[in-house]
Image 1: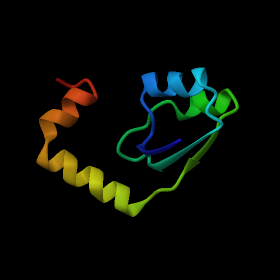
Image 2 (image 1 turned 90 degrees about the horizontal axis):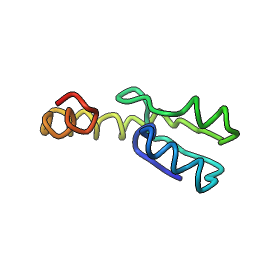
Image 3 (image 1 turned 120 degrees about the vertical axis):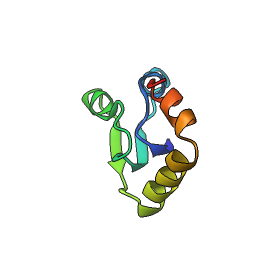
Length: 75
């Protein structure tokens, strides 16, 4: 599975449930989800530390902070 950010708890659970073998994460500075949980269950987790993903997320958060805050449970 390829994802811009580290997967949330529900996505982490879905990866385990459906036996996803590898999760490739664009960046995990903006949000750290269930990476450790995945690794503990044998999932290969690759973090690219992509500058493009970091810039994309920074722009999104700046332009739509209310959407981001709702998504991460801050509102």
